[in-house]
Length: 360
Image 1 (cartoon, rainbow, N blue to C red):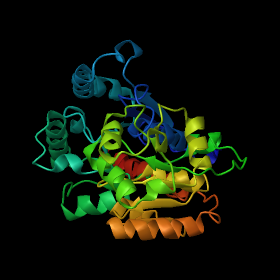
Image 2: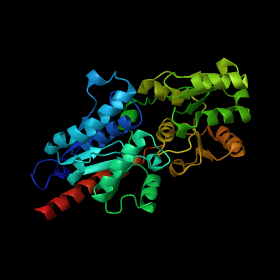
Image 3: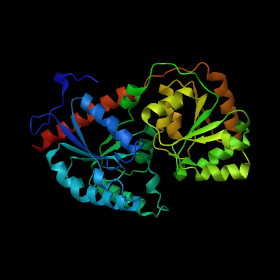
């Protein structure tokens, strides 16, 4: 990304280029999801002339058990980030939660990826923590950043943040596109299922569709996103008596290998009950693949001529038939998200600059 120096945003208080600190605790521990979102957001900020820096979990602690990492996450977000943020013009908390102390300053903004944790039936400690910090953030009217229009609509309909200024920072794909080869790899016979271990991913439901639709008779299945953990898949194999060679679970892959998996697949399958966005659909689009996906709001936003949606078994069969007919014609589609993100970053900066002048 090139930067026009004449358009570089300047802090109204100091006269210097704006600097943003982003809390991305699991960056360096996880490679996809929120860490990938933040990496690309930083590239977009820097391309708009804004200095961007991330706070990640120190390398020495990254091997701790998940329960201890979660405790360290909370302590860092609540106690360390308010201190580190003093030297920055804006502080963005990228994981649905925020620092209660940090919310005392208007420089703090929160990224809302989805509203799965706001379900009060979810009594898990992480969900309670997110709800508590969001309430404080909302009460103080601090800035909110949504990653999809669907999430933004839910937030406005539920009046989660009635006093907050809201912004739309969609997922970006600068790093992905840098690594995407222009070479056209030969499409193979497998379907690539993009999934995960969360309940919202409904991996068991996807495997059930694979069996009941009899897709397993004509297409091998490769699964991306499980990082080699295949307990659910093994249980399914035993129940269904499907041959082991019909299903492959990928280990954790590099970005380059993920891209190759997309480019070689006959088509890409994205199955989920709830999502904030749906990064796999966009990545498949950029690799010239046809997509079959569940008909949920964030996925409907990304639908194009080569994306086919379903809600039940019969809908899945129809979507697969349409996808099979279209896959030979699918081609690379440009990421429209980049222009939207860069325009919204400029609005984010200009809004804060105008507020700073009012405070002087």
